[in-house]
Length: 147
Image 1 (cartoon, rainbow, N blue to C red):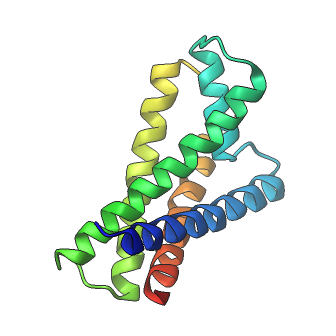
Image 2: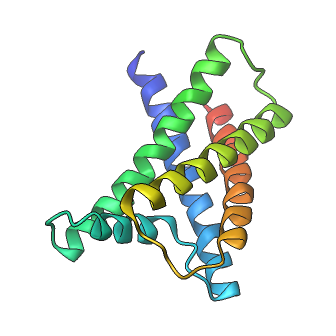
């Protein structure tokens, strides 16, 4: 992969993850629920009894969140580059929806592995998670196609 492609994927993932996270924070505040993925990740790290400071766990939660966003966009790139799925808004919507399903399944596993059971509305969390991943897919596509 050439450097320009890496930068294109990186910028697309940074913007898409930021937009998705902004919507998660807005929904979290609107419904007065903890739907903030980086915060939940840091709490899961705490539940795993990893001996790091609270600040380090918080930073690590954000790094993990953005790294996963990068992996999703890299996956999109591979699908687009190998012409497995077209570079269209509909395809981006579908990729976002698939990412949402993967995200939901991943969070179910993360909560089980970490034995962290937050006091949240799980149905609401997973529903918003699905929709913010659709926004993620559309945002990733929008930025990716700008290059």
